[in-house]
Picture 1 (cartoon, rainbow, N blue to C red):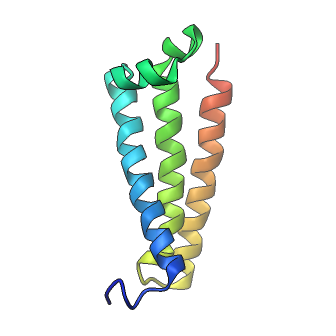
Picture 2: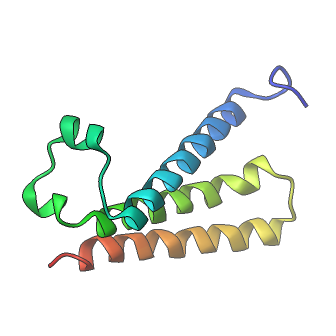
Length: 107
């Protein structure tokens, strides 16, 4: 299987999985270090309330992108239908947890 054998939708899914993985690592880094990267603070201009909550924002970013990454796994990796359906259920639970983390975590 090479890139010439793949349909365009598979390439989009592969790119989405790669970006999701990068943002998952980024979100975990922000949540664990409890600091935003300096470049992000320079260009994004977060408000004072956003600057004081890197764990909530980083954790939310990590949960959302973990959900996206798990949603793309059944399309990129050959697996039985039931396992793919179970992974989709886990992805939905992670998405609900991410919304709860971001919305309910506000002070």
